Image (cartoon, rainbow, N blue to C red; front, side):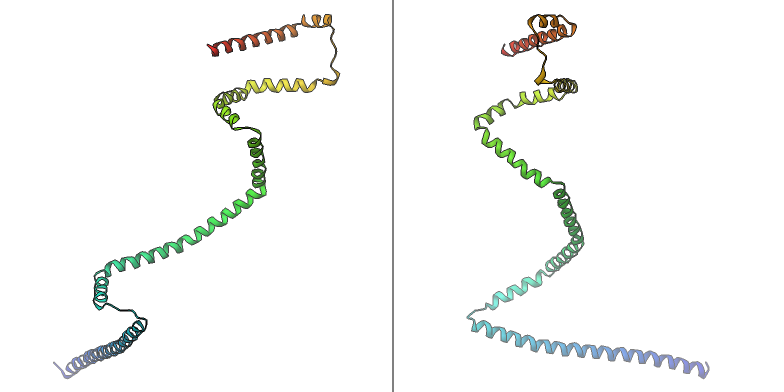
Length: 226
């Protein structure tokens, strides 16, 4: 092996030794810093403890050393639990941060909705509707309400029948005919003229309708009574 190769290996070894020495020096400095910090913290801790003892003594508070010792032991034993608790708090904080924009948007949407409802007059409508309720309460007695409750099914059945298409059509036709009649200038009919009018096809059909209607009402009333 020539001298150049030997010198190269020696140089590599020197470089590695320099690196090792630098690492040892860095670790020594770090250890020294830690020792200094520990010493400073020890002094601060002792001062704080002494100050705390003095303050508690001045305040007349007695500290049970054994209880403090048990508290510290419990804290040490439950480090994992405390860590999980802090993690939960951090997760809750993150969740709150994520939910804050959503809650704000929901609040804004709610405000816009309430504004639209107010602009459309819903609140005024509800306010005026309370007057209807007041009038009902003041006009009807408790007995009237009881009778309404007892007959509500019949009333709803009647309303249901009245709202059928054929019934609504018949009522609308009757209203149109009524509106077309000038009630203040109704033509007068003598008895003879009335008898002549009753002989017409329209009147016969109308009389037949009324008789059939009355007969069916009487029949239905008789069935309910039985």
